[in-house]
Length: 270
Image (tube, rainbow, N blue to C red; front, side, top):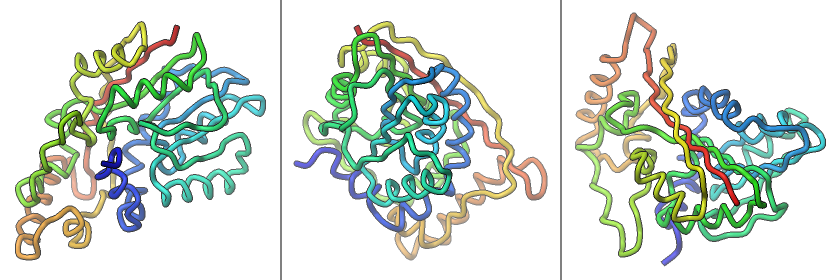
C-alpha cells in the first residue's frame, strides 16, 4: 500500500488545490506565532514540512536572509506549483520547493538546522515513522517547531463538522496506520509521545488562542460539498447545516468571528 494514499489523492486533486487558498487566511494568521517560536537566525537552513502554497516557507526565507535557505516540502503537485509562482512573484530566491512525502522520502539540501511546519504534519498515516524521517534530515543541535490544531470541539469555525452527518465515515485505518486529518495531533500527550518515539528531545507545547474577524468566509457551494462526498439529494440539508454553524459565529451582518485554538510544539535533536 502506498504511504498516505488518501492524503496523496486529496492534496493532488486539482479542484481541492484550487479552493485551498481560500483557507489560507486562517492558517496564515498563525505565521507570526510560529516564527516567534522558531526564532530564525540569519544564515540558517530550514526545512518546511507540508508547506502547501508556500506562504510559511517564503516568510522563513525572508527571516534567514540571503545567507540562509529554505526548502519547502509537500506531497501536492498543484500547491507546489503555486508556491513556486508565489516565490518568483515575490523575488524570493533563497527558497525552493520539492514534491515529496516526508513520511518516507528524502529531501535534497540538507542537513537542516531547523524543521518547521504550519499545519502540515497532521496528515501522516504513520506519524512516528514520518517524524523520525524529519529528524533524520536534521543536524545535531537542530530544532523543530510546528503548529497544529487543538481539538475540533474548540474550533467551531471548522465547517467540516457541520457536514459530517452527510458524508461517508472514513474507513478504519489499516493495521499499523493512524487516522489523518486536521485534528490528528490535537491530543497533546499523544503528540508529545509521537515526537519522543521518533527521537526528538525536550518536547514542549504552548497553547494559543486567536480570535479572527472575517468579512468573507469560505464558500461551501455544491461543488465543494459534492467533493466532500455529500450525495446530491443531501446537498440542501448540508448547506443548511453549514449556514446554521456559521450563524453561531456571526457577530454582526457581514462579520464573523472565528475562534482559532491551536498549539505549537517545539523539540530538539541531540
